[in-house]
Length: 185
Image 1 (cartoon, rainbow, N blue to C red):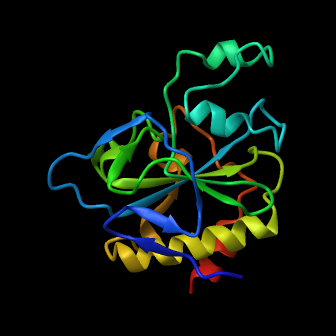
Image 2: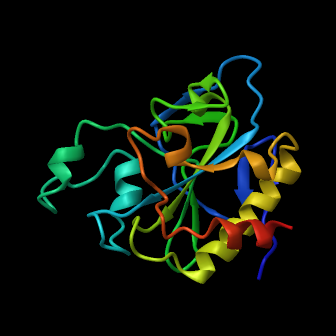
């Protein structure tokens, strides 16, 4: 298994497949990356391996391909990284930029979590257990990020539900935080 590392100057994870998303912008001046937000997503909901998540994040989702897609057509979202059910990592936004993954959010009294976080989407749902290889890859990614951004500590690795509890439930009750944290020690 190849070791993951970050290229700070480029803001990229190596090796990872890169698909550029325009659903991002510049972080505020002086922003310090000090948090990782773990998400869960599948498109259509509950279907895996469709390729629709990448299309959605890149703004080219075929809205006629599924009845659910027109309901999300107005959304412009992305994450920095996506880990599929086989553990493959795709990067959509360089870490130096603000990906649009958290939406209206707050953590420890700080609003706008996109400003200071890295978003990682796992292919999954709130009710289907994530694959062991996804945890393994997530732990590798987070270790690389913690090395590159020392302000990210285990206490600052959170779920979308932690920063937007009134709106979001992902990565869901099936996500095994204890297992992930053991893998990070």
